[in-house]
Amino acid sequence: MDSHFDKYRQELDKENLTTFEDLENLIRPLIRTATEIEVSKPSKPKANTQLLSHFGGQPYFEEGEEWPKTKKGKNLNFIFQIYNNGGINLPGNLKLVQFFYDWDEFPWETENDGWLVKTYTTLNTSQIIEHAQPAELETTKFCEVNFKSVQSLPDWEGIGTYSKNASNLSCVLDEDEPWGNYQKAVEKLIGEQEYRSQLGGYPMWVQGEDTPVKEGVPMKLLFQIDSEDNAGIMWGDVGLIYVFYNEASNLVEFTLQCH
Image 1 (cartoon, rainbow, N blue to C red):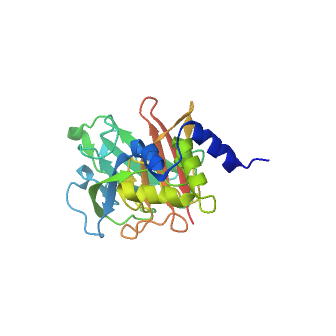
Image 2 (image 1 turned 45 degrees about the vertical axis):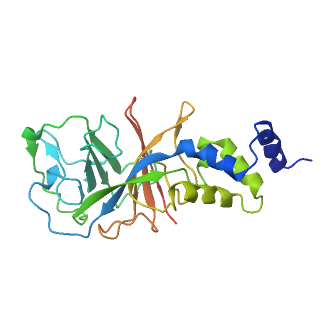
């Protein structure tokens, strides 16, 4: 009986896909530009931090808005906000993205209560107001952020979602360590990928591929946030959170993975 590797080999032979160079050519078109979020050391908040990208501190609010709460009415912790001032990998329709989280509830996925991605498509800064953080909440350390443009490719766990041929070719090139040639090709094309906080690009999974797929199409990553020591953030056991976004429907999906 033929193994699944034999089946892969037969299918790939029909398309003349047999070499490491073919693997490179399959994944090169998948490269996406992403924005790495570099979280600075904690510092004393400056004036008007509502108008800056940062972790912790005072989030942006407009008149008539209240501090976000869970469905049960519990106040959510403010984690970070990112302004889309151009040059970073956020959808063009989003001017500001904020994230709030309930450390007590500690939600792991979209269906859980206790997390909120708050987005603004327009900003009325003449209506800006300040809301003091509710006293009972754990405070995220105030940290300014810097942005760095990076290239991104799916990790080994996720490549099959975007290119079955690339996944299968990597398998037949080395049946014992099928991930090896894929990782080698990625490093040759864009360098080594590491866990990091970033906007856009592809998720770097801790426990395995879990990209939401809607109508047969994988959703695009809005952001992933690593456990950030400077901001005092730890997602479980040195984990990450992943948020996906569909610009057409405004749908948001959330998941957390840790070691």
